[in-house]
Structure formats: structure tokens, C-alpha cells
Image 1 (tube, rainbow, N blue to C red):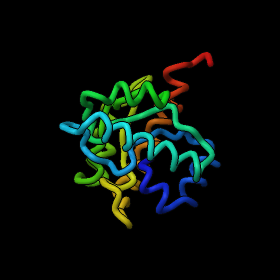
Image 2: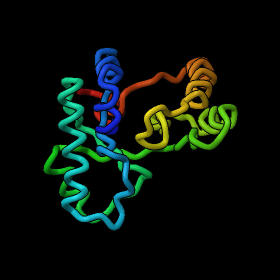
Image 3: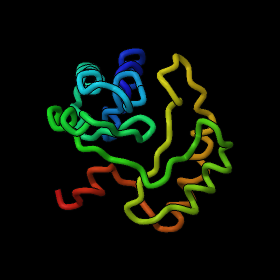
Image 4: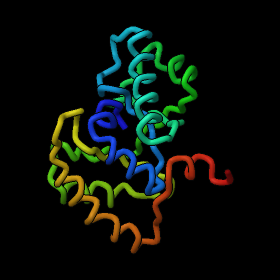
Length: 162
């Protein structure tokens, strides 16, 4: 979750947490982190941590860098905040591709332990259109379940015995 989105829509963030979904930190404002100072990077992560905790009661332990961009200073910020960096196996490009193409990509790439990346909007915009994302998910979840795959949190994938 991006801190700005959590702050703007706290009831949605709370409902996600209440439904039992694992919540990760995705910075406060979704900036590219390349060419940013160590202090800026830390403030982005720390601000998101604070907002997510305040509005959901959950302290994220996972972090994914916006755009997948990692930079000097990110590791130390993650360590200070107790965040494990996690990347994706397949990114859906759901901000620019039509739903059938996104669903096909995921169906072609799916395998045990694979992490998919989808979006609730590309940035921290007030009213993102997520119709493509929802349509892709509606198409692929039944197909993946039919193959015998199941959905787990990142922590369940990384630490299956805990």
C-alpha cells in the first residue's frame, strides 16, 4: 500500500486488513527511487509505515519498490524499518494492457511460488480506473484454481512453516 492512498481512503485500507490480506509497504507517494537521497528514501518508507499502521493497525514487514527501482540507501532504510524487499515474477502491465492480454500473460506464466504484480491504479491518483485489473483477475482466478493452483500470501510462500 502507498501511504498517500491509505490516508486518502482509510476505510478501504482497513477493510483490506480486516479481510486478512497481507499488507506491504509501497512507499508513501510512489516515486521512482533512483537518484534519490538516502534520507528521501527513508522518509518515503517511514511515512508509509506510519500511515499504514495508524489506519489499519498492521505494521508492514514486506516492501516492494515502485517500478521495481532500487537505489543506494534503500537497503539501509528497509533494515531500519524491518522491511523485507520482495519483487514480482510477472508484472501485469494492467495500467496499459487490456484485461484479456493481462490474464493471458498471467495464465502463461503461473507456476508454484510465482508472485504476480497488479495495481490499484498506476500512481496515487484520486480515482484510478481499475476496471482492467478487476476484469483480468475475474478471468484468471477460476482458471488458475482449475489447474490446482492456490493463492497464498508472500509470507506463506517465503516462510511456509511459520
